[in-house]
Length: 105
Image (cartoon, rainbow, N blue to C red; front, side, top):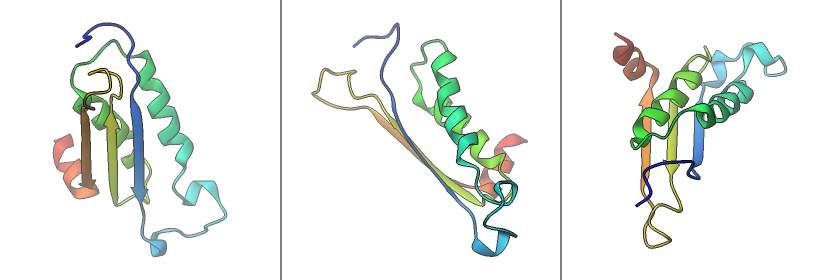
């Protein structure tokens, strides 16, 4: 297993917001701004190698919950090339805003 250097990581992120929390579905400041999520995922590329996908999943969760209308989220990541096609390590995490806030202390 390769433990150093760049590795491909596939990221899937979902942010959920109740419709009644969105004042104006046509105004970017009132909806789920997916660019915030995209930029957080791209920022992961700047990190040094990390054996624990959980750390990266939590970084994306932080970005998702920075969006005020989001009340729950789901993030999954997998490394398709780690075991040369024999297996794919993957981590998925579903979290509510309340759970995320408790983690923040």
